[in-house]
Image (tube, rainbow, N blue to C red; front, top):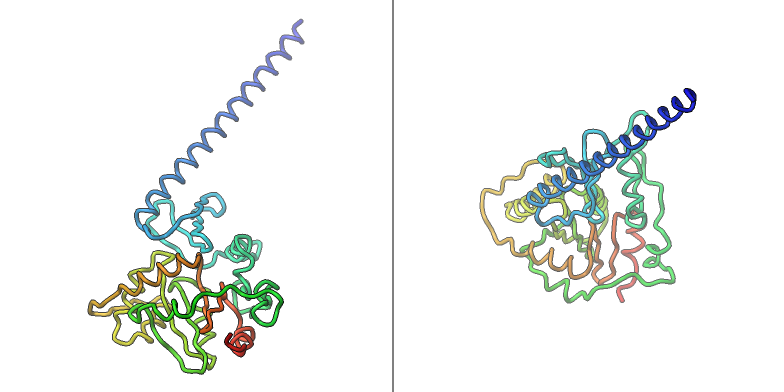
Length: 280
């Protein structure tokens, strides 16, 4: 009888412990949900034009990962500090940001490699290669609608027989890489900033700068831009409205002068071939 009584006591204690652990887990889950909701509320207040998809504060200790459609950035738990860049795990030697971006949208990371100085080795996926002679046509927009966008929302750089319009965000790493790549090509580039990562003030400073081309480079390098004057920035509103209308959910987006559209970064070799295509 004593043995049975002891067994029941042990079983009861184990059951109570299991219940306590379940309660603790439930409480922790609820607290995490409340924490995420609080962080999201603060972030929405500070970045009202950024559509927040998910916030995850459990993946990386000390920071919260924020997905804004196809873009990724990080914040502290107070949502005061915005961190734009790559997170690299030095123990596992893994680029956590690149892995996450690839998980989010493989097609938009054509040509995207890991951290460091390694050159991109990935090739465009078949769906994206279609514009360079594949069987499937690339999506297109009306060139007249693109041409109707106000010049007050653009910065024109470079010269060439072909023109590319790039919808970009100055805190988008792949936009910077595309900007640097296009600078090496014989092509006219019309840069049209859109605010995906809460960068509207930067875009306005660039548009209002006396030397807009220099301001673009400074913006991509993370430097401070002082325009010293106010100007018409309604063109930026037109850029963002156009991007929403045509489903540009991430950056960069490249539009050729015949209306062909590419989403995401492309390496130089691909762009050179794409630019040689006959305008339809």
